[in-house]
View 1 (cartoon, rainbow, N blue to C red):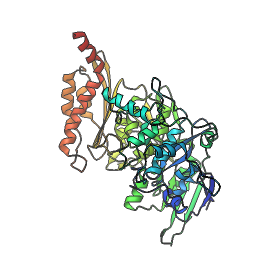
View 2: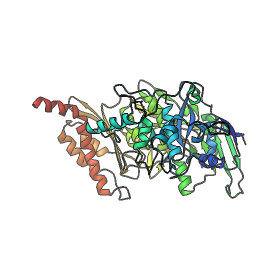
View 3: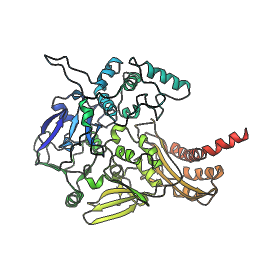
View 4: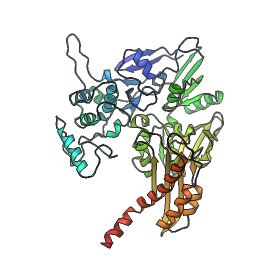
Length: 525
């Protein structure tokens, strides 16, 4: 067994390793760091959020907020974690202590009431506070110390017809992106005081140790192997956790143990463990393998490594794939995206995973790897049944390949009970090319309307070769409403899902032709 050590709040701590399934949250609380708490055990409330020092891709460190209730403690071997207790300086017999700027703003603006969720908010806010490219928004005033500037700005936005809470691009005058708090829930404050605290934050001081830490390299990946024979109350069965150092080692290990559970961010595996009590005998962590964390742009394709987190992919792509740029903000929350991967979302085979409809519309392919070699499979042929795929034992997703050029007219729509941080009832990705007024290609990916994510092939055929007009869209919408085999469940009825599908195509057409319609209307005036 390797020696397991995690640096927490600047102090290296040993981990016993006799409980491979123990969560980071439980270990931290056993260590006396009880700021992080369990609220939902599913990564939806953010009460457990902590900061992790991650590679920023340029040789430095990016402070990243993640949920501690989902990943195993062993996944942080050799890593650096900061909890809410480690941000400020506690009082001592000879010192009054010092609140961190985020903690102070939350306190003076009433951002904490019962306090249960506050440490998680603090960590998510701190990650955004230390974001190096956070800059004041041009043309906006700096928030006043009493919070009135942000309140007045919100009132002005409301009067202008923009919702200051639900605007998906909302930033404060200080450049603070409220999406960074999308995974944190509060049942007391109504969020106004929390938003004011976020918008009142300035820049880190020159001597701020966490700001200085950004210039240094993040901890390197550590190969980890822990095996326990069980026999205790907390770990009754034999279990093993392994983090291979290379892809070749991972594939060899997976070939020898095809029943092992692969994990990256543990955003799905952690929920299964917490809610359903699953305890796989063997776990192979692939989140730190360099060969799975690449993003390559070529003349004919963009290739995204399966273990690159969604947040990392979003930053690296920087809007160059518009369909993915629409997907990212609607995929769970920032806390989840900081750990979740495309490989994990597709690997589960879920019919309601948000990435599949978008990638189907993009015509994506999956690069599958095993000890026997690699093969490329169109995503449209990957799913074979409910949570079943063409992957054979010992085979994993190495990368997602997106062919170029991209379609010229695209859109992604997610229908759910909440706008953000929710599971979709229906999801649809559209990608259409129009030449001289005629549709020359169309790809439509759907989620939530069948046992697997599907291509809407009948609708695609109703579009290709026809004039790109509202009449064509209306006829195709009828075909789309009949696609799939939607079910009645707690999120939506079958009839609702079918009705929504048809409307989404009309919405896509209206949005795609919005500039044209506007010009036509103005010309008529």
